[in-house]
Length: 122
Image (tube, rainbow, N blue to C red; front, side, top):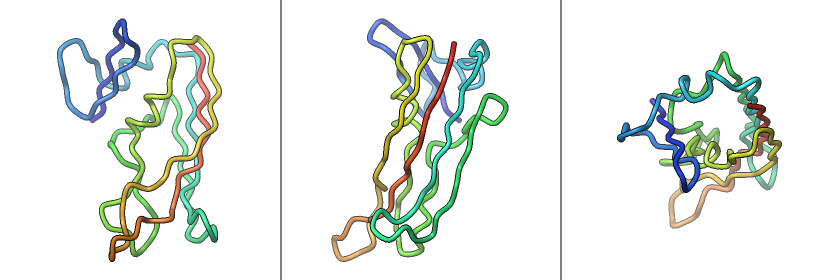
């Protein structure tokens, strides 16, 4: 489950409940639109692409989007880091890339990334 709190310092996104936070579906209930589209693939070769798409009727419910690298250990892409990009603006359009948090052994980081676009309107 993902929880969100809006306070004076901005948006706080967490995978744990804390005072004043609401479930992700409650936070987005008054949004006119929300879309998160992206593709996980090898940053160098484009191998093992997998598309992910979320919207108001299909909000993310887990903290991580899984990495598609078959050799990756403990990897993925944090929904919390992505939703943290939501600003206090009424309308937004963000295009970003998030590197995988995992490794492939031998001290080497995973080379996969999640390239996404995030659009919303309140």
